Length: 197
Image (cartoon, rainbow, N blue to C red; front, side, top):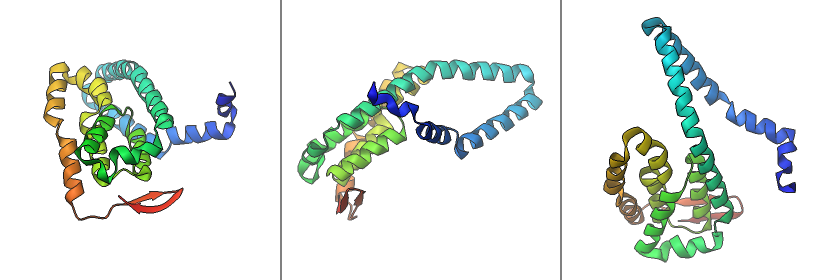
């Protein structure tokens, strides 16, 4: 169990707590408390209690899914074959590279921290700008975690399938447009000099 020795590090635990309960958390907490007081004043305590009960039910329903999605994102991060990324989604990969980037974006679980971390790794490993745009567009529009966690529970499976189908070509189209635009995209990598995507 030496791999989990970092859990005993007080500095690591403090940095995680600081990141989790930073200014944005307290800002959202203050806004929620203010809206709760307004709701109490306008609609009464029973409505606030009902809203809090529904919040707890939503949290209990989503927490396991979010935990699993973040675990998968971490595993993908350590298993990503960085040396092969350039061959799969580099400048010479054509439409095939855009399709690969679209599939990768679609199956990338987690929120922006995992998606943009993988995007940065892909960019530093040699992915071209079209593939980067296709990846992040697919993550935003076709992401399976979004479909399973948000679309199906809130809107139903018919809506989720419809949204997926009408959005299917958007990432590849966005990647093709990105490749045609006359911009020089500079990718920054801490371990290597800047390169153009």
